[in-house]
Each structure stands twice: as C-alpha cells, then as structure tokens.
Length: 131
Image 1: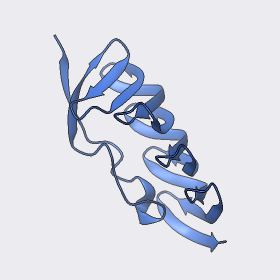
Image 2: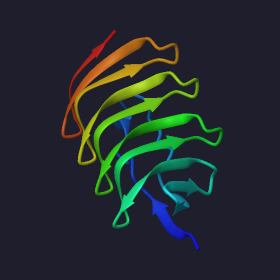
Image 3: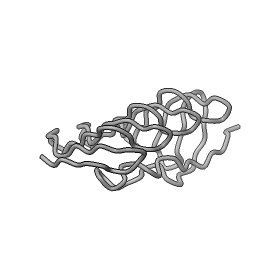
Image 4: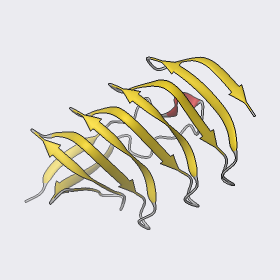
C-alpha cells in the first residue's frame, strides 16, 4: 500500500530571479522504498524521517534527467541546492535556510555561461549583478 502525499514544497523556488517555475507544486504521488513517485512520472529520491523529507534529495524528470538536488531539514529546503536545465547544465545554485534563499546564488544560461549573481537575505534579493 502506498502512502499518499500531496507535495507542496518549493513554493519559494527562484523567486522569479532565475527560472520562474515550480515543477513540484501541488503534484501528488507516493513514497516507497526511499523514492517519491509523482503521478506525473517525475521522481524524487531521499529519506523521510517521521513523515518529513530530511537529508539529501534528488529530483528527476520523466526521462530520469536530474532537475534538482539538495538537502531538506524537517520538510524545509535547507542547505545547498542545485537546479538544472533540461540539457543538464546548471541553471542555479545556492543555499536555503528553512525554505528561504540565503546568501549568494549563481545563475547560468543553457550554454553554461554565468549570467547573474544575486545575494539573498531570508528570501529577499538584496543585490544583483548581471554579467
């Protein structure tokens, strides 16, 4: 029997500084043997502790390409996160502290060229440099 979970994390993702999309918002699925299976075909792999995401997680699209990877603490994005374009190039990378972007974030285009650096404090952009 599958444990039904409605996945609603990542609502603060990118804050429209990088790519403004949330591939996981309001998607449903189930957790089994260390993996979260979205009914859309996407997949997340990581650990649940007391029903909450904790530790390292990796999320894949329907073709098993990595969409994102990073760490959770009690169901909150916490620590280093990296997000990827469909061609496997990084799209952005930085830290979260309890679901808020914090510190320096780097953003790349699909060719792997750095185009933006933004510093966040508790989810609010405080400075941006475009290259």
